[in-house]
Image (cartoon, rainbow, N blue to C red; front, side):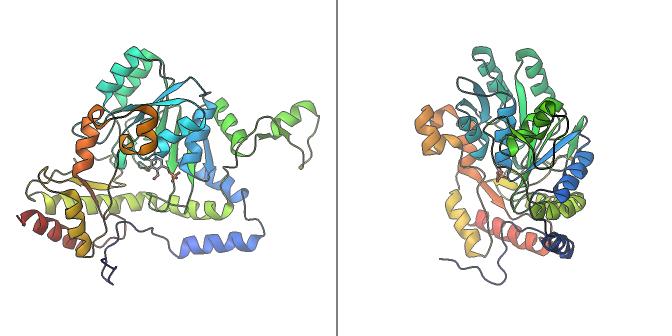
Amino acid sequence: MNLPTPDFIPFSRPVLGPEEEAAVLEVMRSGWLTTGKVTAAFEAEFAAYCAVPHALAVNSATAGLHLALEALGVGPGDRCAVPDYTFTATAEVVRYLGADPVFIDCRSDSANLDLDQLERVLETQKIKVVLPVHVAGEPVEWERLARLRDKFGFRIVEDAAHVFPTAGPDGLWGTLGDIGVYSFYANKNMTTGEGGMTVTRHEALARRMKVMRLHGMDRDAFSRYTARAASWEYAVVAPGYKYNMTDLASAIGRVQLTRAEGFWRSRQGLVRHYLDRLAAAPGLELPRWRDDHAWHIFSVLLPPYRDRNTFIEGLSGAGIGTSVHYIPLHRMPYWKDRYGLEPGNFPEAEARYQRTVSLPLYPTLPPEAVDRVCDQVVALLEDP
Ligand SMILES: Cc1ncc(COP(=O)(O)O)c(C=O)c1O
């Protein structure tokens, strides 16, 4: 076993400093820990940053995706199109509501959804919601997806877990669908430890998500029946969930939001460095540069004749942390067995999975560490 050495380069590392510490301490000393005015301020600042009217803080992106589909009325008998090449959260929320995911392969030149295949599915099946994922931070082909939506009439919930804070011509990625959901999980582009944010331009969807986020409690519904509601009065209008964000987490989030653009610029710089250094690596396929790529993850594709797992062991032996994004859902026992998924139905996702390795990337990764990773990658590839 390779134990981490002092000069171990982790795959990921959150960047938290004295400002976050002070903000958390202030909440701890305030006497109010859970959802309160700090969360309200975080939501208002996040909504302003994204230029959307509604932002709702939640305790994970998974919770946010669940709320989004619930608000859109997804239920038993409905179908939602999800990528095969994603984290299981994107698909599991469809099952939470008793609906069924329809799995779409990725493109041959990108880990994002293959819209040709999506279109073929839309021609034969009624799809209620499409959940595109901006995988690794690479924006999906929005114009074409929007044209398909106009033709077939589905709703869009953007799984924007990886794409904060970059924008396309029409606004921030994650704000263009009916609802978008960001993740603030520990390794994401900004973090609250665990957490997420749903954003929408639709008042009614925001209202429903707000009620369902906290036990189905609706103070406005109560006020409808009484002239004046006291601070302790509320009405329960549905069996809701417990998905609210604490003020402790929001305090971290408010600071991280002010740093998010800087974090992204640092990621961009490190990716440029990787791309320069690895341009001549034999047989290696590199991700394409895009100005609006959020670079949550930097994955490379090994030459097909190299064994990915041996390669990962080689990096690990040199004190370099890596990961694999993703083991496609068709390989997961639950999805495979329930929906009869076979690798042959997802040739692009399967091929990508066999070849992919994600290299260390986080804002404070020193450029010398990138050099060390690149030297090791090249040495392993040159080793016959
Ligand atoms: C693509 C994608 N969607 C959703 C999630 C779920 O995010 P969270 O951990 O905040 O629930 C993740 C988490 O890693 C993810 O990578």
